[in-house]
Length: 325
Ligand SMILES: [Zn+2]
Ligand SMILES: [Zn+2]
Image (cartoon, rainbow, N blue to C red):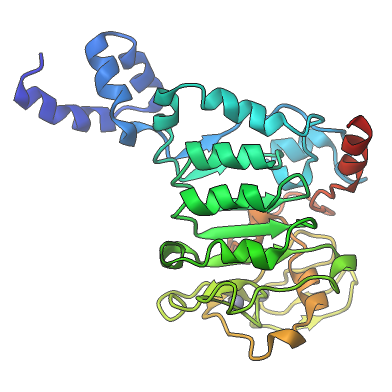
């Protein structure tokens, strides 16, 4: 059985099987179990965490929770009642060395409606060192949690800071100001609530030397990569109307008020802001008020299912969590 020629074809055979067949095969003998569990490249590159319910049913007055779950718009759904829900799941996943190794090559983790704590970030850094994107959302995390990710996940392309009101974004950005992150990082999205727009201290060259703010899309982009790939989404057309049902961009008829929007319908190169202190943050607030599941895709590739949608606000969650403390 374990002769050289046979071992050579094993990876080829395994590559033709789907995950279910691989798991079934692993259960047939110790030989196959070893072959399969030690071949980490066989495991899926994408992991979906289980959905374990949310704090309440509210997803806006126009939609039901069932519909929103059905179309997988997780950024609309409030997190579970238990603020430690995510760290509990990840603790189980990290319960043995074998299971920690198993996720080494995972590139995408769908965290669904969970939000991170420092402990869940520590476990994410341990379990999934190859992830390409991470969302730091809300006030349950601190700079310590972000540090775990910056130290371990060196292949991050996309980073989001969404309504992180308890951390200094500039300090957080400095953690990613390394040669390794410079190679992969290509998008940094920072979003604060409209009312806190005067309080934000945006990162500068001193914090993240290779990233710059784009005056067109309002995202931070990697200056070293900008001439190689067009990653800036924009609308070449003009916008007519103003918060009126027939308002739209002339290029693609997107951005009808209350429909989820994306940043644009065409790609070009990012355009560096010449004077970052004069940024029009109100403009970006409107531009960036979409869902991460859609926002960064080209408008023409996207079909929106819901009318009237809003990304979850966590204020109510904090009130409840603080009361239970
Ligand atoms: Zn357009
Ligand atoms: Zn841009």
